[in-house]
Length: 311
Image (cartoon, rainbow, N blue to C red; front, side, top):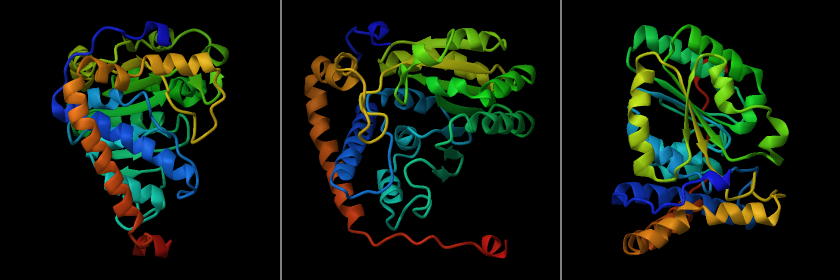
């Protein structure tokens, strides 16, 4: 994938966008550090290298739109809510956790946002929500994030079939980083994402740039069309900078180096050093302070509702 990524100079971002990119980057790096020290349990899947995807999309969504995320969803959540305290508390099982500490890294629910670690699960759910939105809330859409490996799940095709037949306001964002856990996409998926979308009469839009401004501009009209009942598959040719999970990276050294060579973080620091260095240290220090503050909180307690107890 990396050979087709954009190598042109990245356009200058507003401080707000760059701060969000840096927040996601340093949040993810802090998680890996905490796991490495044995301060966290379970597992986590970082979006290192892919942070620009949800940042570019964030302003295109309204508060009433539904977003369905996946196992690699910290960036999706932070781009939606900018709530590192609540997310880290959820992962660490501390008071103030988004879901009382029972969802952990992968299973988050807040307002009209939901993530799950079950591959493909969100596709039919998002299609069902999109059907409801078409009937009850015209102009509102459902967005679902999936990866290249998720195209091995039948639920993806069932959802696309219904979305096309019923003209649902469904936006499918494919973060194609070229590897499904440890299997290269070329070894596990025949054909292409574009051809599979075309088989259902669904429009496909390929993004090879890592430039947030460029991506956002190019998607304004296609996303607006989704709201009018034209389902869309947007495929990002991206890369996964970190391991699949917290430490299981078996990629060859040249593949890892290629991902690093295309990392937006290094490129942006090169292209806009004054702005980058002015904000990078500040955001890094903020994440450090957040981690210290959350770690000092008492353990979270999930208070069961009466309806749960009754069941």
